[in-house]
Length: 360
Image 1 (cartoon, rainbow, N blue to C red):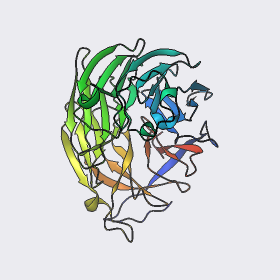
Image 2: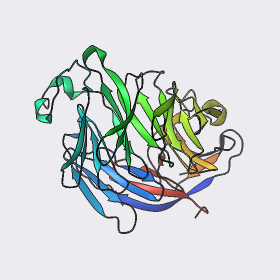
Image 3: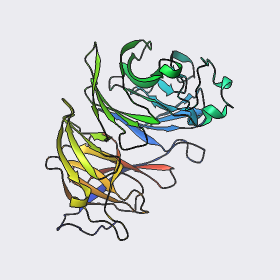
Image 4: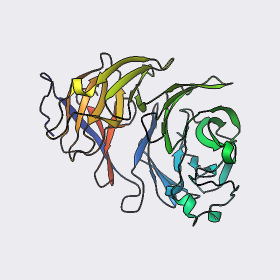
């Protein structure tokens, strides 16, 4: 996929296809497949209405499935690094289930419905046909790299006193180890684990320019966080020293230190990449990958049929040049861990795993 240089003479960087993996629920109603990754571990995960399908990308690509307690439009789901436990973030509860669908534990919380719901629903069937629950907001959850902790974004408080909290739970028992009020009003949220297991990123989508990013730290006793207003988390680097963000307007990239969340550098899209014909300016994607200490893969024009992907040097936060693929790709470059990133086919039936040529 050739990309013409824009500002100055860019070197072109070649993407090498590492693998193409068929989506486990291809051909059925399902969410877009995604890769969850931790140091030394990659799992391809896809949520359907009745199950969460997981494919281990190591070895023989073993596949296993978790029966879902409710359809996919009623929340999100994640899986442990070992692939033995799934956590479903629902409208009224976090539920951890094993591969048989058996409940390991459940933590109940206030309803994510945008309508006022003060009922303590214990079964999905109680609100399955309720219009007030049909288009609810949602929280999210994620495992730490060692699988011992679950971080979860939930609602609590009850009625007019409802608030949003960030929880750290024991993944084996569901016991709440730490909690902190987020002071957010979420429509949806997304977690981003740090390799050290003690830090976590949380993007909270509030539907406006004030949508914040929370950079959390768990010291074994207390959960604290830094709030970055008007930023969207993209990815953390392989060493864990820095992470990348953009803003809701997609104007700039921001490089932050993970130790305290402080901004180190920024890169305005208008100063780095020329717009496509008909666009007023280039804008960064809401998703990106940070697979190398000296290289992040970031896209522009997420509305385009053939988006442009760029190699950005995080050390200088400057564009090194376009990424050239052996065939056209769609969508954003997505995080896949150290030394790789991925793209999803336009029909969502397969995932392509990439690395930079010459970096093996």
